Image 1 (cartoon, rainbow, N blue to C red):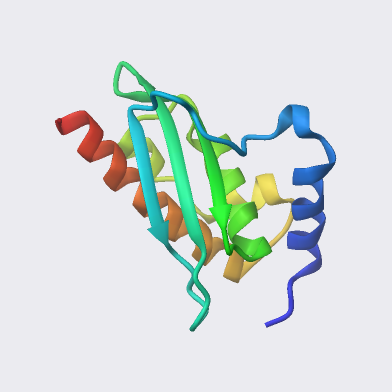
Image 2 (tube, helix red, strand yellow):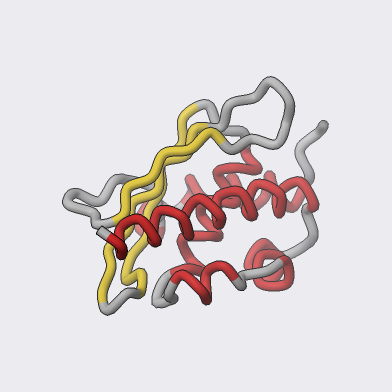
Length: 131
């Protein structure tokens, strides 16, 4: 499937302003998750999510990608931005409207990537909070 213009525009923006980037690792993160999330057959988006918790809420979330397509980079970045300050129930409730508002348009495939990353994050938070 060809990459959508709205995804490519956001993807390019991720690399044009490093000061605003949420890519990277958080040393000593309370939440550390790795997952292979690509909904495309045969592709292997490897996403790493790193989060800091304060009072059961994410105070900061960052990501790293390996072998990721632009949809996954975009989905992970949007998740990091939307999840900040939220607890796991609020993160679980993040939907397509929130995703598309930050994206600046519609991307069904991008939202599929976002949902998979969101589910992984919720599970990782449950694990971190229950330990």
